[in-house]
Image (tube, rainbow, N blue to C red; front, side):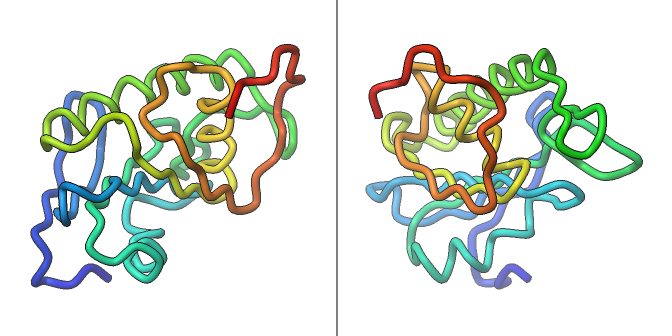
Length: 154
């Protein structure tokens, strides 16, 4: 549950369902990415506990699987649609960058906290996109989904 005293904005930006909680704009923004079946509210208590006073930007995955929100498609448990992973990773990187700009936040030093499906897409973004807005990641229950042919310089 989000405190009512927080400066909170919940809205769609094009097709980006998200939650923004203002904090000190001089601190890195915490980008929250939920697991399968979750939404933009799930990781807020963890972010508030770990990074009090940081701005929080929580994104809802836009892929639906049997009514459950995800960040990218899968064929079955443990069988991932890598085309969807690449497409949705590009969408996520672009969307987070645009939202950071919209809320006048630092676009070069965000921290991502992802759980399961959210951790997988954040890790994939770090390993495959040089211009990812989050440079640090707390990946909870993540999996390596693709072979790493040329490791990113983290």
